[in-house]
Length: 220
Image (cartoon, rainbow, N blue to C red; front, side, top):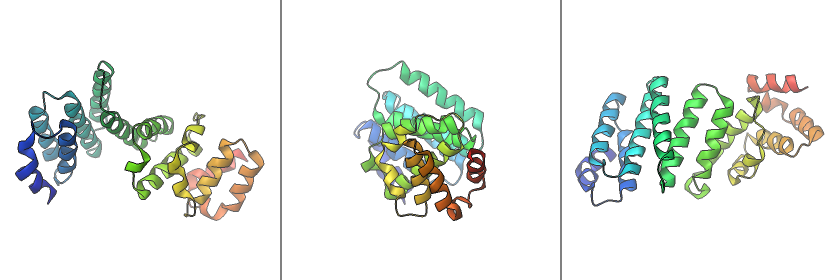
């Protein structure tokens, strides 16, 4: 399996493999550990081996923050994320993979906290550092759904045009989330009557999401 392959082949290549690729492989291997605490220790050991490569160390720390989040240790997760954010802001020439991973875990944290505005902001940052070509069709769809829901549920999300400009949104077309695509497009264009018509047209689908229905009733 991946963990066995890592231990037998990748682990000893610290100074031969590209540090970013090494860190990313380490992050993938860490997910193979059934015990999350063991996974955190695994990443700690990798950080020690990678201590000469700051970007790689940042990636390992971000992965540890993700593990803390999975353990429900939200405070510890946020502390690590903020420490990494502060550290990279003091640096230059940071690899985009670091920014992408940091933004992704920030978005996961804020989604867990049901903080729609910060989730949306962090997700936009993730997409800014992640080429659409690197996302699978399903990943594009999931990001579009979660961000679209945040737009409809958030009270202070006004930069919807940034999401509408992303090609990933087209992943919703022709799916059971066509309703979300139609609502976002009409809302973003300021087409109020078309927005209301879309709500009526997709009532059966929207009714499956009580929180969204509540917001739609409020808009009425």
